[in-house]
Image (cartoon, rainbow, N blue to C red):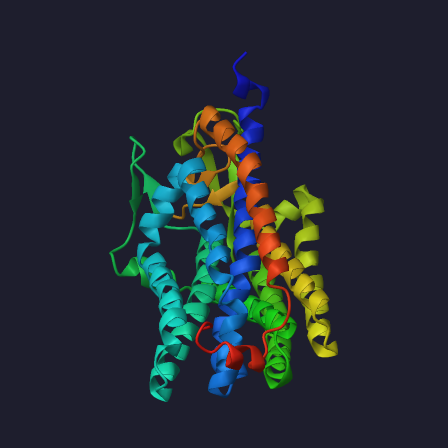
Amino acid sequence: MILHDFVSYELLRVIWWALLGVLLIGFAITDGFDLGTGALLPFVAKTDLERRVVINTVGPVWEGNQVWFILGGGAIFAAWPPLYAVSFSGFYLAMFAVLASLILRPVGFKYRSKRPSARWRSNWDWALFVGGAAPALLFGVAVGNVLLGVPFHFTEDLMPMYDGSFATKFLGLLRPFAILSGVVSLSMLVMHGAAWLTLKTEGMVQLRARGIGIVAGIVAAGAYALAGLWLGFGVDGFQIVGEVITDGPSNPLFSTVAHGGSWLASYADRPWIAIAPIMGFAGIALAVNGLREGHEVSTLLWSKLAITGIIASVGLTMFPFILPSTVDPSSSLTVWDSSSSHLTLFVMLVAAVIFVPLIVMYTAWVYKVLWGKVTEDDVTSNSDSVY
């Protein structure tokens, strides 16, 4: 028996679907507070010294946090090639906007303090704001469009075709439900950034972060609840019709999919998945309470719980769908028909089992070494060596 036959194709597909979710959650939990901190920068810090304090709370870690983003993109490319092909072509302009805004961050970090000019530094502060707020918003918009379905189809030779002009590929993403999803994402990460600043700063910066974080948490809870109601009663779901082949070849055209009904029907079929939205709401409530009470470590942990629950609720609600199609539902990508080969998934799993724990341990060690608050005295006494 070949070694990879010890793990069934069906199980490997589910494992890699779960690992993709883990990588996305890992990115949101780690780089998410970087994005939230950037979005908060012009509002929680009023002086140049305060802004340098805020920047230096994430300065030593933001590059390492983006490893999760790279891992997620690599996992999509290697484990889910059709998903990579469709999403990166259909969301091309949106992804270009995300990458452009992410590029502003390293440039802003490196160049902001190179000149003492107030105008120079203010411009880079707003660049860091855009580099934090824009990706946080656009990632949510993308998730909203995934839930709504995307206008693509496959030809007989599995060539992905995306309906619409080049411009409408971006403007068509700005649908009301998708924008609401963007609000959920942005407010969630702003709350997360506020929890991080509560842990890493003191004085007026911390107080302002707590106040804005409480408002952001309330907005996140309200928007998340509204999105759930909208998803249940205003958005058509997708269902596989007929026999489901879980260990067959990866060809989306082999399945028959119907567009209609409610996504929330999955909660009747699998009641246990309700744990995800419960985690989302509970995490927000506890994080908001932590911000209100001035707790530090626990608030950040509750914020992480909220992010985990909210992102997991999307994946669990849609399972087994990964990217539905509105123009040809039978071209929709599911866990069962859009993966790489059995052998490829097995080899990747072996690599993941070895390297992902190493990444987690290294990340934990880095945060342990960098534990503690960033103060104004730290920045003043090390002015030439910090951001």
